[in-house]
Amino acid sequence: MNQDQGHHWRMLDHPADILIEVWGDTLEELFVHGAEAFGCLVSEGGPEETEEEVGVEAHGETEADLMIDWLRELLFLHETRRLVPTGVRITELTSTGLRGQVSVRRLRPEEVPPYEIKAVTYHGVSVDRTDQGYQTRVLFDV
Image (tube, rainbow, N blue to C red):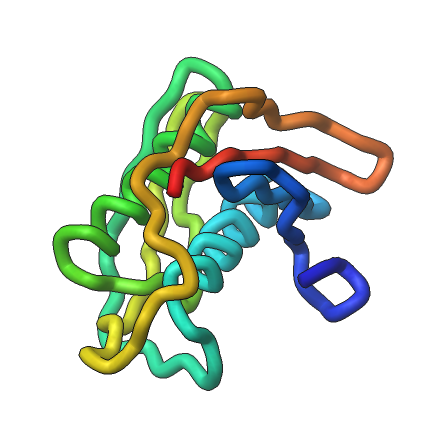
């Protein structure tokens, strides 16, 4: 998936794990698009029906730490409750904290996720300001 198809993230080549690049006009959009990318990696996609909203908080010393913690919180919801994010509304965002309402649906019993993500890693992660806004690269251990 790439920017030409209307997405704000794409997968990059990586020999063993999943490496994604995410971008947004604002820092808030970057976190929303990061959740969107995660949802696509752990579900078959298609029309998404929101079943409930879940409050999610993340914390970090830097924006990169914050992105990792945000995605780890989403992974925790996926692993423990089989939830897939379908949308995000950020309610508070600082350089070290994030609060949001995540619209979710349950993974259907017959649904086989494209990837079995084990962890969100710190390897090579950064959040960068660019001429177009913000971008990050995140490596998932599969």
